[in-house]
Every structure is written in C-alpha cells, then in structure tokens.
Amino acid sequence: MIPINMPIIGDEEKNEVMKVIMSGQLTTSSIEGGQYTQKFETSVKSFLNVKHVFALNSGTSSLYAALLSLNIQEGDEVLVPSFTFLATANAVLLVGAKPVFVDIDLTHYTIDPKDLKNKITVRSKAIIPVHLFGHPADMDKIMEIAQKHDLRIIEDAAQSLGAKYHEHQTGSLSDIGCFSMYPSKIITSGEGGFVSTNDDALADKLKLIRNHGISQSSDVKILGSNLRLPQMEAAIAYIQMSKLHSFLKVRRRNAEILNDLLSDLNGITLPSEAEGCLSNWYLYTVALEKNRDKILKNLLSNRVGAAVYYDPPIQKTPFYITAGYDKLILPNTDNVSKRVLSLPVHPNVSEDDCVHIASTFKTALESAK
Ligand SMILES: Cc1ncc(COP(=O)(O)O)c(C=O)c1O
Image (cartoon, rainbow, N blue to C red; front, side):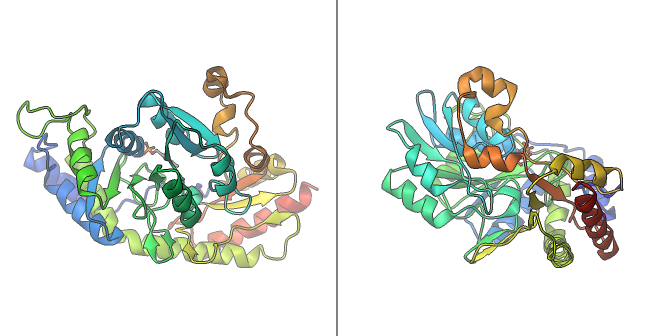
C-alpha cells in the first residue's frame, strides 16, 4: 500500500534523539524552553521570516494558546470553516467561545469571504482561516474584512508549512500562525506544533501561556497550561526543518506528475493553485462528479492509499449535532465533502508510484461508471 501520508525519519533524527536521552535533560520548565526547542525555533523563524516562533506540544495546543493570548472567551464568536479537521473548531470551544461555521469556496475549499461577511455579528472577535490541504486561503479579502470589522486573525497553518501567499509564508500573514507536527504533516516530531507572530506583546503572552503563565519560580502572570514541546520531539523537529526544502520539492514534483497524467479525464476537478499562491501539496485532492466512494474502494484494493478529508464536515459530526449545529446548511461544504478524494504525493512516493496511482485511478474512474 502507498499510504496517504507517512513520517519520514532518518538516522539524523535518531542520532539527535539519542543525544537527548544521554544528556538526561528530557524537557525543561524554563520559560525559554530547552536547547533543542530554541534551535528549532530559530530555524523556523528564519524560514517563515517572522519575529517570534514558539514550539508547543501539538497543533491543537497552538490554536488553544493563540485564542487564549487574544483573550477570546465565553460570549465571543470565532468564525471558522466547517470543512477542516475538528481541532480548528474544538479549540474555540475549549476557551469557552462559540465557533460560527462559514462555508467554503468551490475551487480551493478554503473559507469563503462572501459567506464570512454574512456571518459576522456584534459578538464576532476573530477569524480562523485554514490553509486547507496546503493551499493558502484568500487572505487579502479575509484581512480586508477583518480590518473593517475589527476582528483578529489566527491562521490555521497546521497543513500549510511552506505554502506561500504572494511571496509570504502562510502562518506569517496575520496576528498568529498555528502549525502542527503530527506524523502526517509536512514535518513531524511525533506530536508537536508551533505558533508564529510578529507582535511582541502577543509573543510575550504566548511564551507564558505555554508554561502555566510562569516566567520565574511561582511568579504566575496569566492563565496558561503545560503546552511545552519535550526535547526529544524538539530534536526530531530541528532535523526535520533541515529537510523541509527537499520534502516540498518532491511533493511538488509528484503533484505535477499527477496533474499531467490525469489531465485528460472527464468528471473530475484536479487541484490547482490560485494566482500568486504556491501550495505545499500537503494533500493532492480531486473532486469527482459522482461515484466517489466506489472509486475510493477500488483504489484501496489496488495498493493506493487514497483517503477522504473531510466527510462528514464538522457541523455534521455527532458532538456538534448535539451541540445544536444540525440545522446549519453550508451548501458548498456539504457538496464538496461528498465528492473529494485525496491521493498520496508525500516525499516517499516515487515517480513510478505516481504512474501506478494515476493508472489505477483511471481504471477505477472508468469501472465506477
Ligand atoms: C487543519 C488542522 N488544524 C489543526 C490540527 C491539529 O493539529 P494536531 O493534530 O497537531 O493537534 C490539524 C492536524 O491534525 C489540522 O489538520
């Protein structure tokens, strides 16, 4: 089976992990983080070209910390897409605020600025655009709306490390960027994540929030939690950063091969890049006119680890139905969630694998008719 995504860990990561184990310092509660945390943060800062980066123990923790740092709380509303991973909305609930779901656009499946405007109320405090599948959201329009209505922006860049919006790295465009290093992601540390910001005041708060609000001894300034990234994970992440450019290069090559080999098919929309945008090709996601589930089954039985993200969308999951979202209609989200399918393009997919994936896909599409 060619999996949809996989962690790519080499001897370099293993050697650094051994060094951490031998050092005996597996983590630290110091406000600045441990040696590897700091090395990792310096490397990400230069890649993203931002002033501050803090490593945290997951992408979910990053969203949670970002919301806390902006004082989002009970009574506030946060505008989020429903066509995303659960964490985007769960983090809003975790700080006591209400996620307000916004529909997506049909081309890149990211938050739709037109619907965004319709969903703003006096309680709206922030927007969380998700750079879904590694393609940037429509940030100029989103930022214009945010400015007009005095809303903060947290980019959910969990899937978009290395994707660019008009020459800028995603996650560096707004108040705070939130990234994940879960094993399926562009780089991994097992579990892990990080936040980025150019705002000095927010940076001070984020650093405290990751550490129970403690800067020195029990000098507790604000509410925080233990969101620290341990040293073994930070060591893996630091090495993974040195491989990021090569990971991105192979993902793009694979996406281009698939685009080329699948270009003559009917009944399918291939992924594309909006003008001025560069995807990181975290997922290569096609939309089918019909027979999605039959095609998926056929691919899986022929060694192609295709997957569906996201069906159901968040508002249709049992927890959110019980929370009262069952009547919500998001036409594009509901439509797309029944039609999309992602194919593997991660760095361990070879050119030959791409040829196998494309030919299996063509056969599956034909035989599903
Ligand atoms: C869009 C999105 N947001 C948030 C997260 C949460 O990240 P993590 O799993 O590291 O908590 C993920 C990844 O799983 C994600 O894909």
